[in-house]
Length: 93
Image (cartoon, rainbow, N blue to C red; front, side, top):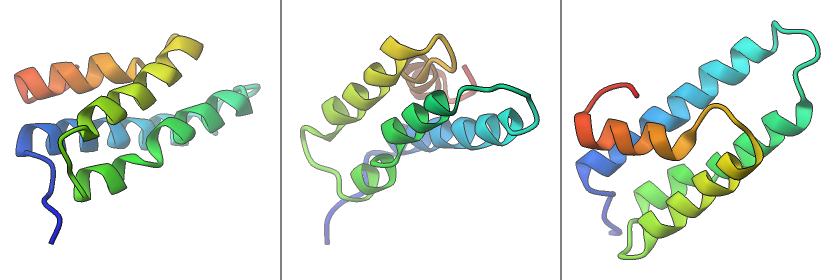
C-alpha cells in the first residue's frame, strides 16, 4: 500500500483544494469570470488527490510545481501561499 502524505502536507493540500472548490463555485455567480482561469486552476489541482494518496519523496516538489504554474498566470487565489501558511500554522491563509 502506498503511503499518504504526512498529515501537515495532507491537511494543507486538501485546504487548497477546498478553497479552489468554493472559489470556483462563487465565480459562477459573477458575470464575465475568465473561463481560462477556472481551467488553469483545476489544471493545477487535478493531480493533488493522486499525489497525496500515493506519496513519494519527490511528491511535494511536484505539488508545488503545479501551484507555482497557476500562481505565475493569475493573481488569486495564491495556491503556494495558502498551502505553505496552512501547513505552517494549521489554519487558513
